[in-house]
Each structure stands twice: as structure tokens, then as C-alpha cells.
Image (cartoon, rainbow over all chains, first blue to last red; front, side):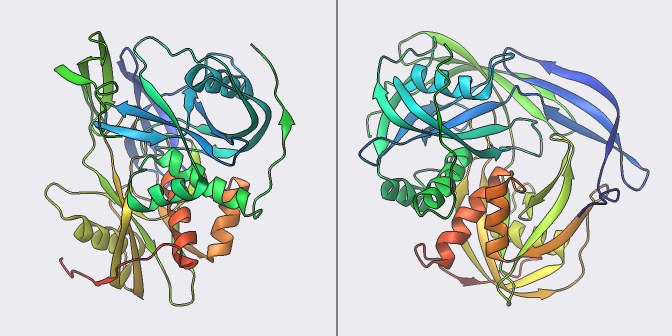
Length: 195
Length: 195
């Protein structure tokens, strides 16, 4: 798997396609492995973090939020975008507090996912949190969401029956199932406590 | 969970933002639950299908493909976009055959995922396939990929250690793990055999 020259493309030029209020898209011309050329278009994204927050009674913290792009209220693990220059754990602590009100005593980085490799450079870092205490949430303007909780068994049933279709949350369910069965280990650390 | 009026947004206008070679983006103005207004921008996508193809020896079919948006060779379950008007199972059979060469005797629809609910309406239907026989693959122009196989244990180890970060494939691993443990049942049907 080390020599990937027969697969790798190399960008030869980039043009900006779109700078919206939210979306930033570029087009790149690439040299293909066979020497030909092709055009790739994709979204530039700052990256994000998702939090699997474990309550002391074994339930997990979820959100219900209307997602306009898919026209549905979605059940999701809390998540949020990195601010410029922000450390990932700091972002995780901030977004969990802002969206749900919860502060966690301990954190563990699980892994990374790429939601949309066909046309976005977005990554989402997956973190677990435990030792939760409830403070006050502080939503952004124009952000409306319900905070709910579910047992892991309920969450997995919803992944099975189609009530959960958000890919980051389905990925979180894979992590949760394997962490709870002790097949996958986490390395827990104290909160960073950055503001 | 039935009354979601405090969450739902309603579009009041749409403008086209971008019609690239590949990306199609729109901006919509929405009425918020509190009567305010906001702007949402997202990608319009025709939908796609992903195939979890089970070989007779218990291994699964995977691809290694360079994904320019993330600048990496990714390990993925085979997947492809719906052609206009194409039935999802027909697309699954076509894409599996074109990308990997495999034809499957039996198919089962597992569920649906949404890769990127923040800024795309894309859905990916998840299908299992078994009873595989190898024919000839036929890649699109400018498509370069390796077909590999892995045991479910290898696949799950790669999800754990970060070798697999593609969210659709991580979601497929959740399905595979629960189907193999018999926690989640599938309803197998004969191939449609559409061309």
C-alpha cells in the first residue's frame, strides 16, 4: 500500500468558484496518474468536532435540530466548527457547553472522520466526554435545537430503524458500541479548561 | 417528538449560487421558528448508493481511491451517484459491476445515511450484496482505483486506528458489525438484473 503513484492526482491550478456567506468552493485542475488532466471542485471547510457525552446514568447527550439542506429534524451528537486557530479539545469543550450546557470533567479523543470526501475537505474529530455537570447553554443567534438523551440501546435502535441517518452520528454509534463493549479503548484526560 | 414547530425553518426564496462542472449550490432565505430570517447555503446532489459486498470467504470488497478534496488515498466501500431517474438497486448493481467487476446474486437494502447535513442534501443508500461472481470492471474516464478485500476484523481495526476515516465507510462498518452479530437483520432479495 506504500506506492500510490498509480492513484495520486496533483493539482496544477486553483480558481475560486464561490465565496458565499457560508460556502467556500474552489476548482482545481489536476494531473491524473496516467498524465491526463481533470477538474475537481470542492468545498473548503475549517474542520469540526463532535462530542459523545456520557451521562453518569449511562445515557448519551443528543440534539434534535432542523437541518435545512435535508429538510428534516435530525437526531445528532453535538458538534461544531473550529474557530480560526482554535485547538480541537478547546472547541469540543466550548461547543458542548454552548449547545447543551454540559461541562465535562474528562475527555478522550477517539478518532477522525471525513463526512464528504467527494467534494469537501471537512474533517470532524470525534471526542468522548464524561463526568458531566449541567450549566447554562448559550446558542448562537438563529440556532434552535432540543437537547435530549438516550440509552446506547435506544441510539443503536434508531440507527437501525432510520430515525438516525446523520453520518457523523452513525460513526459515533460505531465508536460508542465498541467502547462500551471494551473492544476499543480510550485514553481519558482531564478537561483543558480553556475558556 | 411530533410537534417540531419550534425547530422547523421555511424557505421563502432561493437563488442559484454556483453551477460548476460538478458542484451545484443554492442559497435560500428561511423564516426561523421565532419569526426571524436567516440565510442557508447548500449543495444540491442527486443521491448515491454504497455497496457492502460480502465475498464467499467472509471478506468484504473495498476500494482504495485518491480523493483530491482531502488529498489522501482513502479506503472505502464502493459507491456511486444515481443517474437521473435510476432506481437505487439498479444503481447499486451497476456501480458495483463497473467499479469492482463483481456481480451479486442477492441484495438487501440496509438503510440510508446523510453525509453532510450542514451543507448538502446528499443521501447515500446502504446496500448489502452476496453471492458474488467476478466479471470485468469498467471504470469511468479519469477514474483510478484499486479493488481490495479485507476481513471484517481488519476493517474494524482500520476504523479504530484511523486508516479508515470516510464517514460512509465507517457507517457501513456499523452495519456490518451488527449484521454479522445478528443484532440487525437484513431482508435479502434476488438481484434485479436491470442492465
